[in-house]
Amino acid sequence: MSEENKNSGGQLNLFVPIQHVESVCEWVRDALEKEPIEVSEHLAEESRIEVYFDSLLEAQIAQKALPGDLFILSSEAREYKEQDWTTFWQHHFQTLELGKNLRIIPEWEEVPDDDKINITINPGLSFGTGGHFTTRFCLEALETAFQTLEIHSMIDAGTGSGILSIAAIKLGIPDVVAFDYDPVCVDQCNTNAARNDVSDKIHFFQADVLEPGWNTKPADLVCANILTSVLLDAAPLIKRAAKKRILLSGIREIEADAVADTFILLGCKEVSRDGDGQWCGIVLDV
Image (tube, rainbow, N blue to C red; front, side, top):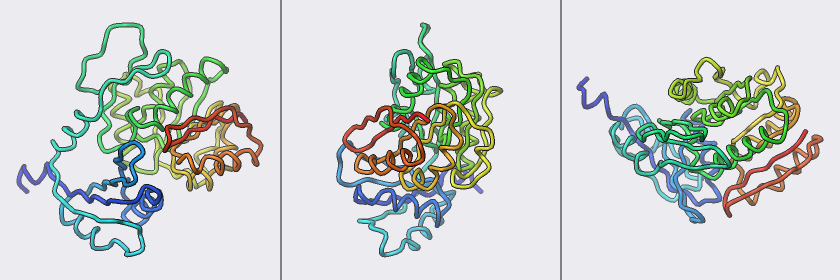
């Protein structure tokens, strides 16, 4: 194999009405066993879902396997080069100031010398840079929980890039475990943890939030930045895993009441919620 081919792969782009993004993403995970990446503008009516493969041929085969009832407006399979991904993130991911004392810094930018809690991230193919509302919400709610409650342990369900777990350790939460369904995310989490000198302080592992086993040791705080349909199905497991507080995001604003009501029926109390007109996050006490 040539060096050029080693550094290229296949990209499948799915253009989907915004209200059907969740169902299409679920199909991608179930049928293609890939983690989809949603790219959309604020309040846009259409979203692009990107799926990455090891080769263009794999992307083309997946395109042909798309069912006709999947609410996809159009699709395209194209080759991408490794540098395309790096260029994408360097254009879209910039330093972010969050909450009272958090700062998210791309790996390719210099870390300021000040008293802020700096988290250096290279997202790779995983989700979570702080740029999306759902991640920002969780980071700011995490900081608030640490400042207002006695939080000594946290479970990060659907950890993505590991950004929330790294922030938790840097805030001062000593016991943090995190998992994701996608093994690529787990690998990227370990790399990001090493970038921030906390690799020996977080246990990252692969697990499915819908399957018992990850919640054998309850934590003071559980954070789940996962799509609504999964949150609803996993609600009993998430509730049992939390001793004090639950942070939920990955929720469309029109679905927020359904999510909150599900957890309230399990005995939780809603503390607050926030949204950006499209996405929403909810804070609950147990």
